Image (cartoon, rainbow over the protein chains, first blue to last red):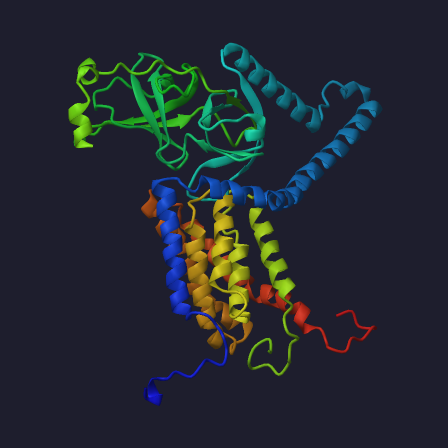
Length: 302
Length: 173
């Protein structure tokens, strides 16, 4: 063994070279990305991290909530001042309506509407509050303040007093993530109220919805109301979803381009109703011929 | 170590707990529910890049990867999306660290602009491949705000190391 092949030990232990580490971590992130995108195997890891970061999240939520309650506080001062004015000037008592009262009235009205909807629907629901829009600029999702501890289940429909706003796509212990119907490629099976035409409406990613794969001569007009058809087994039939805002028929394409505006609003309110899952639909009729066939040949192939 | 290599002032060594606290604090600020305001800086990225430039042997790609995973969960984005971007940013920052410490703070931030921009481009590319829509050019404004925040953040995070060794009771800092 010649002395030249003998490597001197390094003075400082620094682990693998930066480029090696870079390749390792990039490969790790790419494989995580792939696994998450294709198989969704990582929900357990996600749950664990979410539970661990929940205290931090509450801490971050604190100042924002404090700011809004500070706003409420100053509104109350405004109310007091208004009351004072009212006492001094009795003649305008009826006309001075404080901002605070207005806000409470609106909230009350919203709650009543929600309760009314609950009575109309045969399914039960949980009233939840929208905590915040998620930061991710690529998706339309919100976080609500009820989770698996409050019996929220995956896939439940979320509505407000005007219509469907989305679907629960992830459930954490104390929070859930709702994907809005305006999220890109989020589909809702719908029916046009005017003529009962069935289709599926997809989110286009910019706050609008799109009715895809409708023939150029399909009977769709501007102003048509779309409601859930209930064929999916998730949404209760008859919930208003969207209104057709523009229909463009171009003979160069085989399908018409139909854009719709969602009826339910997420920016307008912060109380929503999470509907509990509806009863299962009967299983689709199985082809009799397939069932009758003896399983021998199939098993052999497997 | 000095604030920049050209300065004659010697800094105290960094305290490891301060690195951890600053990283956790930046994560907390990132979790604040601000919605979709364009141009909000990514505080975690700023903190990671800062410590990778200042202390490349203490903070590196491993911590960037872990913080990226946590950010992914909190943002409800794809698992590994921010992890990838932060790892690339950490690598870039630690390779830049030998060079950019010779420059004053403002020129340092100019060096870092391509780094932050590249980080956001990575995130956009990953999401576009995964099938999301383009978020609009305003999304890249946050790299600009990160660069603008670099000098004040540097000053703020170096503040504990500016303290003199022999403490003078009549002087606050």
